[in-house]
Length: 252
Image (cartoon, rainbow, N blue to C red; front, side):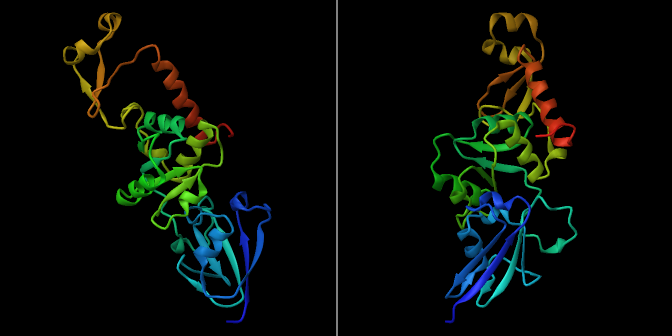
């Protein structure tokens, strides 16, 4: 077929993914191609795209391009814009996640806040994709190619390597501010905690803990015991810092 040109404009922070960092790219095509393939060929995972306009009209990822067109691509974080609110491609309110093996500190933060995150440092890419797909979880990663997998419906690419910035980014991206329930989930295995009587966990306690503490929680999964020990104040400060960043009282 006759070659044709696709002129793409990437809005918001999507230029982060582009090699030249320029917001406009032109692609020459000689065969029918889906808009999803064109966008990902530019380096932008489909999980980072919330709205696509072709010649000013909204389209889905499967839309096929066959002729010269102007394409505008918008990220999820431009939710305040009234532009085509019913045509958004991403689900924002997701509360279940799976994280790749390089995000251990982020996982700890999210679990501390009560967010459901599956994490196995040894998990291979295919396991992560399968978990995300089978359990309808959003995949958190710094591997953009992993997010381009066709089976990955929801996900987020962490721009920063700083765990605090990563945590705030996830909370904002998936609108989790009202879903936080600190100290409700096991930091080790992700299962929920439940109140436990001292007598029920007495054998698991160190001698001084038996003397000075009376209130305990125990994980429903791995049976780890938690109490408000010397570490508790440090964890509370971490939560306060995250909430402050999330509310915009402090800048990232």
